[in-house]
Image (cartoon, rainbow, N blue to C red; front, side, top):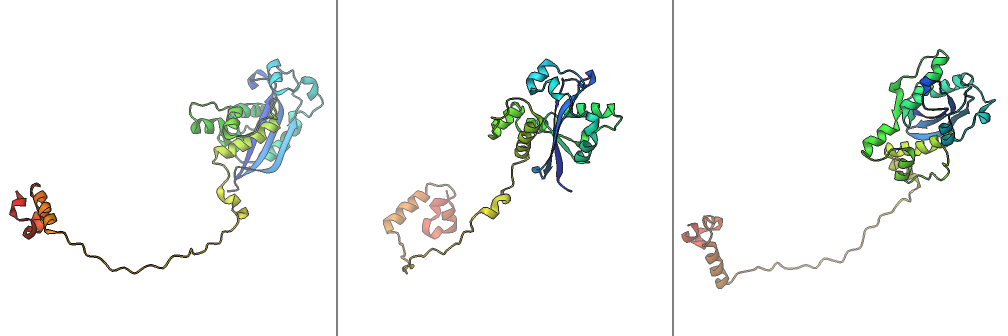
Length: 238
């Protein structure tokens, strides 16, 4: 296995691809073993239609700013080439795939199978059940800086999601940083010479023996009396 995945994010003219809304920005970011390689495909697209005011408020793109940008049909070949056959990682993947497949259907291209999608919303809900799983909430939870995110932007969102996805998959492996750690040289610690001591025999007095026999006599079926009856006598076996 190559360990390759493609992280995907889109911005759109509205919320419903079946209602004619289109993709106006798309970003793909290559991952190897969940880590960005630096390969990125980022395109602004002329959607050929107006943008809903609420969508414009969220991502900041205006219709006028996108006039003259390439149509989706002009970037589809490089997009599909970048995606390849590898898994596609997206935050709320069904949304992005629905728009992407709607664009492909207009061009009579086969759809991208839902089985290729890795949804980071699903991963986050499994790891943090009952907690918010928006991209902003996850960034806060993992301590990822979002100060540059004043609007939704596919490129920036991909970069943030790449960090979130890495954390959801367990973070960077500890061995990645081992090469930079100093090698420790261990030395044997000096020890003081051991003083030779003669064992001391401890012999109880007759009064201590008598006190112990009296105590054993209070215990029914005492083990000591059965094992050493010559010391404790039959009265200890009551």
